[in-house]
Length: 411
Picture 1 (cartoon, rainbow, N blue to C red):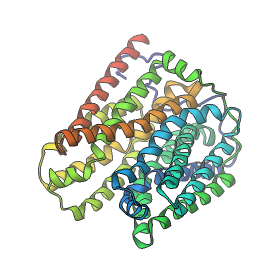
Picture 2 (picture 1 turned 135 degrees about the horizontal axis):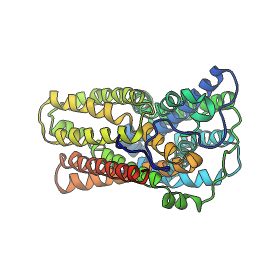
Picture 3 (picture 1 turned 180 degrees about the vertical axis):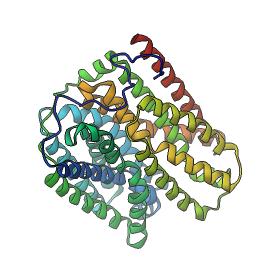
Picture 4 (picture 1 turned 30 degrees about the horizontal axis):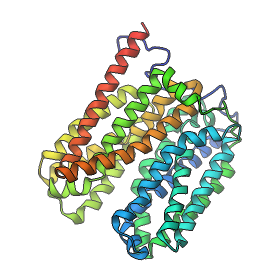
């Protein structure tokens, strides 16, 4: 938001998310609330690891089950699309159920799906198991995103939310490389079984550490489009989510050929650089916290417009490495900032707003990969980050325009 005007009632400027509903954090020992936050963060880590695990296992899975690498890539595409669809459906379907029970059921589903995948006799069975992973990712993320305010005192909500969403970049830094290593040391089945076992351990942690979480407000399916129509901040947040995440994955999906073809980085160093990118992303997540989300995302989208544009055209390994690290650091704050935006835009319906954001986030992953692929196939590898830069620029313009409109409405 601009600094010279007050926000409209549904605008997106407040820095700290308001409670999802009139349900206060439980009056218990502080360590219990933080332990519950850590359990939820572990759940996010486990689910994102499960969603992205096939990235490092496409070739061995395809060779073992007799499918091409392109077909094996459906193991990533299908969960993303299903997660986008299921985020609002699970939130509505949860109804009056205790959110503690819903989260535990979703983690159990993910664990079972990975154990089935580890034993899958055919690619069809494996893909069906991956579909169930998508259900778990979409539902868990949508519900868990706004739980920090119910687990810790208000003054700690920002740090707790950042901790929960720290599971997203940490999965890329630790979870996916660890799963890939297990696949190399044993087999791809070992990697899926290990993630299934981690899911069972996470289930135990949630059962032990989460307090009862009765629904703060029951959501119906008709309320979701009504929330979009009636809340300017939510509409803007969903639009910004689409533009930023589509731009990110239009470029990041093809980061390997970009680093090799444009920056001239040897293929043997790419994995190390991507690990550095992930570490930078974790740092960016915690540095961002839950500061003023529109201002943060305006800075993020503006910086990434420049970074993606430069990495597409500036040659040299040093330049490519520096730009990649800056890219990771800046993008690391996106998930927590988008969640803060939605919590703040609709404090009375944070769970519904979160489900809309998560749905768009996951659908945008698929859209970004598709847009980047069309750009690469139609032009060249540098076209992917240039496409991402254009979308980031549109995101920055959208944030600026909606901020001014919200400020004007609040006068």
